[in-house]
Amino acid sequence: MTKIFWVTCPQCQGEFYCHWHELRHKQIKLLCPYCSHQFLDKESSKIVE
Ligand SMILES: [Zn+2]
Image 1 (cartoon, rainbow, N blue to C red):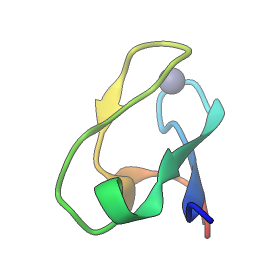
Image 2 (cartoon, protein in one colour):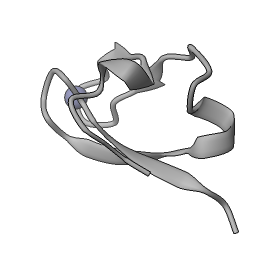
Image 3 (cartoon, rainbow, N blue to C red):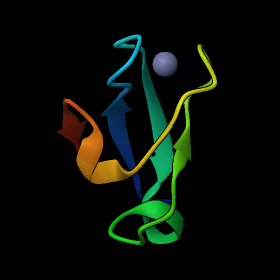
Image 4 (cartoon, rainbow, N blue to C red):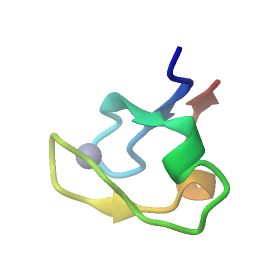
């Protein structure tokens, strides 16, 4: 089963999920599907994993 985590975009507050093994604690910027803002997982205003 693929592990995921939910993030909240700091710009538009949109919530979306990412693949945990690929993106969590990786210093890779996440791309918001709603406003195209790019941010690190630690910049998310909320993380659910
Ligand atoms: Zn956004």
